[in-house]
Length: 350
Ligand code: SF4
Ligand code: MG
Image (cartoon, rainbow, N blue to C red):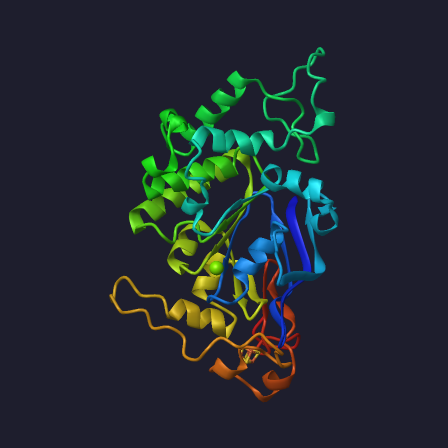
């Protein structure tokens, strides 16, 4: 199976006067081509910090301390500034948190899309197109640079296609963001994110500001776009209902660690980590119309985190060993793992 993205032992800390806050504390996972992975967890679990790191957009006081992020065979943490600039959008694209507000209010939609594309033209790669073989419009080389400079006409056509693909009229091209509804703005952001057919689309709580019906439509659009270009998606969110509908794999984060990772349906049926179980049990049930219950206790402070399981103070299944020994990843099935002492090599559960 083709791996679109491989994250190995990633550590992202925030440096504070009181010490390092370990927001992402040793996360590893593989993302297969075309896979839909949802990263869930309470706020402060490290999911947004991780999304930012995957784009290599971590800014001080945040710092990627160690680990690797391999995309198309290259560790993006080792790329030069110009290389990573090209990889963004062309290979990995971000639909940011509060995406609707990421549009520039004084620039027409068309120009915002075109600017993203033109950003990927580098001098060396342009100018050879008069030869016998005309390259595809917007075809990028392995480093994410466009093979030739598209014509004005080609760009216009491309923008119209992109808008149509996200369910917008091509006439939206000439509009300003304030002329669009929240849902339309969100679609315009999706058009920008997919303009260079990235291998990975990272969507950080892409719909949280929208009403439920619009949310569902946007997720459907994202799913359609994704399968159209065979991109993998990482959906960062806290809405477990949305996740259950959209994703095929779920990664549960707690205190900067991926505590459970596996197939979404099976995990919803039979969660292996106590935190995952509580997250699922706290979901409002549609049939019972019961209120959101929440999980008792507070997320841990990530400063000077003690050894042992970070969930220990809140865990209903805690044992003595959990207090001072870090739980390691244990495979439940080939594509399913959890880090919890309830599961160990000799455990009878497997
Ligand atoms: Fe609970 Fe122990 Fe598992 Fe942590 S390792 S989740 S404290 S049972
Ligand atoms: Mg967040």
